[in-house]
Length: 444
Image (cartoon, rainbow, N blue to C red; front, side, top):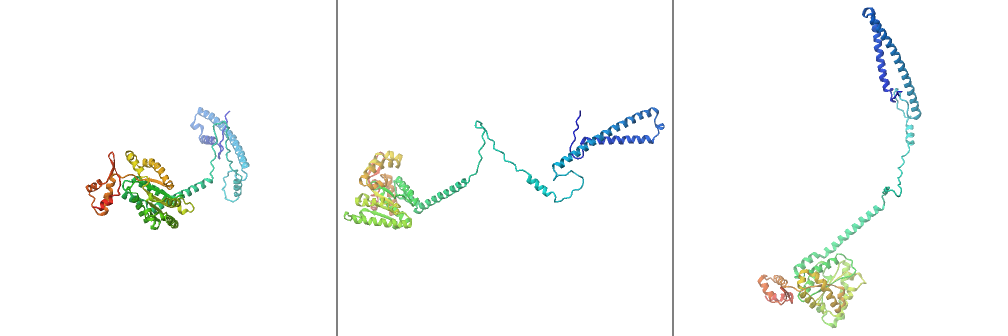
């Protein structure tokens, strides 16, 4: 049995249209033939045999036509019934909104608005998909949900604040260093001090670290040690000259023991005067937010009473003013130990430089200095080594230029030969350093 498939599109099934057109064409052709036969006479055109054949064909045509019409009528009735049933179902499903299609013109009214609103409200909200949970022994896991925490914003804000604080602190450090013009001091020491590159670099390092901030837990104490003529006092004068130009005359003190306290009978007065002077300077420096510098020369001649006074000033923790200060202690204490060490290790010092000198010599010096006084336990030791012959020649050239003499090389060598030296292999170390250079140049 063949099944009929009827399309639900408007206008009826597609096969019905085609069959309808075929039936209509057959009917029209049959009618045309009948009309022609009615107009003509059979005796005129056709013979008897032809007439019999035509009668048989006409009988067949009429029988075909009647059966086709009956089939078409049955199909049309079935289609109308199905169409009616489909329209009833459509009307029952959408009673308020949809209506059967009609050929009549549609007129817009506001009657359907309420229906639209009811349809929108009747729509159910989409449910969120439930999380799929897997067993514990399964290899698949549900990825954790990423939840944005408000603490992240606070953390980012805190990082920005810390960065700004650090940046501001670095700028303040640069401002402190620039205020004391340590770059200018470095150029001056390289130009004026000969043969003591390691010592000057160590001193500049201590000053940069200390002057980079204004708040300190203790004062800076540096002890310059070395034999005669190696440039200790000259270095102290250059420091005093530089700091007078950057912090002022009143915040720099050069204390010469043999000049300020020549006799032992005035030790009590000298101690009181030194204490009052240092107190006034640190108070003024605190008001101006600057760091004072105290340079004590000829410390080997300072009595124990004055050494105790200086130590008390350094160890004072009652007021913050005393914590922000620089003490430079210049002496030739333990110069024999320094000379002996340099002569015995001249070859290794030439290779390794001041690093080995400070590492091995400073503990030896500290053991001897603490027997002299406990003041040196609070100081950073910077030993100045012996000067070589080339360094002495540089001293002669500089002094002759200052006095207005032309520094002829042969003349300078001749003057340098007049001094006494320690000979160690091919190296020669001056016994008196540059101490006699000024006297030699004055005799020219």
